[in-house]
Length: 217
Image (cartoon, rainbow, N blue to C red):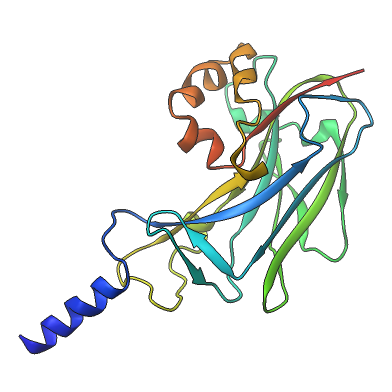
């Protein structure tokens, strides 16, 4: 009984009174934060944050040393209907990619014709960082995402005061939580964007660092 009381007390001290996964907040900057770009404009995406990472459900920060967040960036052109498989219509090929050699962030081409930019953050012992740029070369309406695949690939990582049975997820907070042109999704003819995503915007757009914008000639 004494051992059980100690174990229970330890769990209470860890802020374990929540359901589901930890949800760490990853800040990302998409700039310039405008709604319309011209072909050949430069869009910069940057993510830098301390190893003291804020967790949404407990409302506190935890020290995450050399964590793997599995960042993944994609772009979809959403003003025309895609093929049956959404993955076939990723639109990274409509952009020139500037991937800086100091970061391990690379383009992956999938067998179904889709593509994404995947890799990992640099970690210097105190800070995480990742940067890249995009230059549009075709007009259209696009939706960008900078997500984290932490829940899929790294949810069993540990840290001090982690609740024993809790997995780990991430919520990308792009441009400090701005609405990031989510209303533009209504202009898409695809019900995935103009209906399904908008039914649960926090879970299906903001969580994955959504940012929607036009490109014009």
